[in-house]
Length: 351
Image (cartoon, rainbow, N blue to C red; front, side):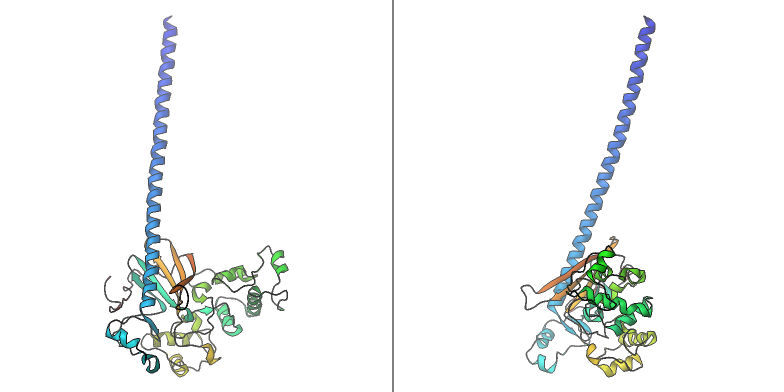
């Protein structure tokens, strides 16, 4: 009888131990779940703050574009009497007069600090428009990314075929059937939407250097209706791809731009130290009314690139052509960037 009770007590003790162990395990699981939930909620809150910062930066830049005007040196931000003089009717004839101390935002992709974000404004004319490929400039640009000379014409022909609605295709181009055989999406036959869309063009993905590295092709490219290049805002690699230019001439232009603006072909030749060839109508020394804006928020591994275009004749004062999240950013090492200028205040002012 005693042995039966001892066995029963032993069973109860073992069951109690198992129950305590199970409860302890359950407590650990619940604690881990709560900890992960709190961490996830904190991460979501951080992401929300980053998105709010990006949206605020977008609005701030749009406000500056609407409250200022463009000049050869960038986005001018006058105020008061200077602003009234700039928008006077006779200013359109005699030219807008701006003082050396008038705050302005450079549109060559340099970084500015805006709140908790870093912003880079790039004149759309300072980028190469992939929507209107030119065999000379684009061919030189592809060469800088290591595309062999015999392959450049093929890539350009296929890019042209991609954006056109036709059953015909160029000799080195590609038809819808070629895309189907390669297991790729058939082209839309419409203008490019973003500078990343050529990655869908047949054979363009065969050259990784175009899409990877510190300066990728989309970083210096745009889409839209612009066909001219602005030497005042174009990056060095694009300048070096212009007819008659090389890397050294492009470096000279960049150094020249640090002190002066370039107003015409003669000044460009002077800055480059050589005669820049090609069609003079392919150049414009004045920025476009659209800007490629890159925004990097503190703590966000992604940067956001969007194109803002002024549309005074539309239903809204400006429009966003695209917004793309990209890994990495030219703004990553720009923590010491100056504050973005505001009307009446230069870049040296603290926000």
